[in-house]
Image (cartoon, rainbow, N blue to C red; front, side, top):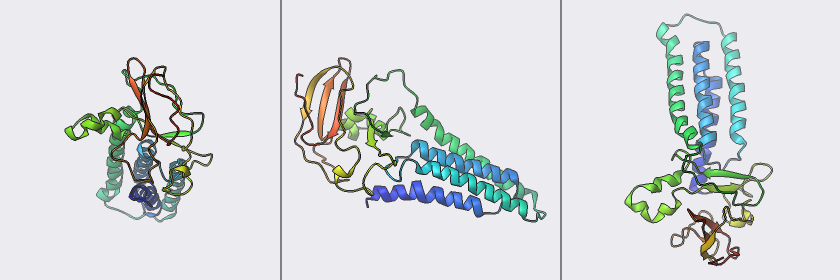
Length: 257
C-alpha cells in the first residue's frame, strides 16, 4: 500500500469517522452547542467531498459519512434529552456553541476557494470529452489550487519545465460500484478501470507531436525523464492540447494528421 493511500485513509476515513464518533458520544451542554458542532463537522465532511482526491475509498464513501453523521447527531440529541440536566456555569454553556461557530467559520473559509475553483473562468478553453463514454472522476481540475494542484506550477523557477501542465485535468475511471481499481493502489496499471479507455480528440486540429512506445510504469513509480509518457500534442489553432499518460501502443495518429 502506497504512502499516498495511507494518507488518504487517515484524512478521508479515519478523521471523519473519528469526528462523527466524538460528536455522537461526547456529552453536550446545550442544544445550541450540539447544533453548532454538528454543523461544523458536517461542513468539514462536505469539504472532504468537494476538495478531496478520491483515489480511495470509493466515491460514495463521503455520502455514507454524512448519513452516519446525521444519525450520530440525532443520537447525541437523544442522549441530551434523556440525561438529567444540572446547573452549569454560563461560560461552560456558551463555550461549546462558540467553539462550534468558530469551526463553522473555518469550514466556510476552506470551502470558499473550493466553490470558486469549480466555477468556469472567462478565459476557459472549450473542449469535448477526451474519453469514450463511461464514468470518470476529476481528481485534479479547476481554477484554484484548492481543487487543482497543477496550478502551483504557474509560479516559481523550479516549476518552469512543468508549466505546460498548469491547467491540466486529471481523470480516473470508476466502475458501477464506485471503485477505480481492482484492489487498493495496485502496482499494475492494467488493474485500473480507466486503462484501455478509448481516447478521443477533444477539438479539431493538427497533430504536432506524438510519442509512443514508452512502457507502463508500476504504480506509483513515475518516469521522470518522460513526465507526459506516451502522449499526443494537438494544435487547435488558438491552443495546444496535450493528451498524456497513454498506454504503450495506443497512439494511433502521426504528426501532420
